[in-house]
Image (cartoon, rainbow, N blue to C red; front, side):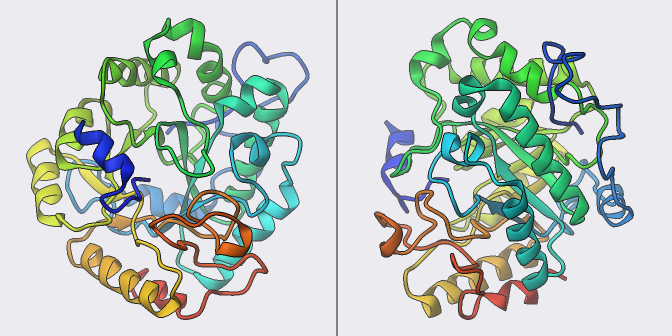
Length: 347
């Protein structure tokens, strides 16, 4: 997420479909997945939400009420998805979200190339467990495949050197192993190919390669990209079935018009700027979700749960940057004061 508010990342910019283990793991005994038949399957509630999606009109996803979710225990991809991954706590924290926000029907989760490289089999197993938990809670999933946003502490960041490297040698196995075996699993709403790519150098070509690989593995998968500006969204649109800009700072009519011109739907896959002051944050949530509701744009505020990830915690848990504190649920599982305001707009 571009959270410098006009932050360092924003300034730098100026200068379905499914998850799983690929063919490399097939038949190895890691786990067996039949197409569309993984644990839990698509619930009736999630099917009803998915069936209502219309990708051809701007308001075709206006009924999607989600959150970004980072588990409380980690600060980056390896600490979340590696040896410390806690499947029971993952399910518990998402369950807390459903308790406080009953109309929540989708979740955007951030994957980790670094955790995959550390231990591919473990990573894929953990992702499968995460998707199972989401499905059991009637939550459609938007997995973020790659990230180019830089926070403090840094989340998994694909470097400029990796973007310029041989694509298949650098990313092919990861994409194959993450996307292949759960093809046709309706719990995956869309693959978010990359979070906040600054579109520098040959990055558009790189995004095109990711898109091509995902569609090669699963031609019916929906794809999207977490963009920050109207121009970025326009440039990335050929690789998106649904436009998913991060609408922290308004500009709603321009995005709706772009979606209309392109014949695509629109979701704000990040929104609701933070603050250490609860009342100030509540007002920002009210203002942003009110505007998104008025423009009939589905929304995924950042973020559900307090964690050690950048911008998702109070000072006692680490460095706090300009965006302040962006979580809706505190580290101890209590609802952050006033943040039930979400429910006024998720209906």
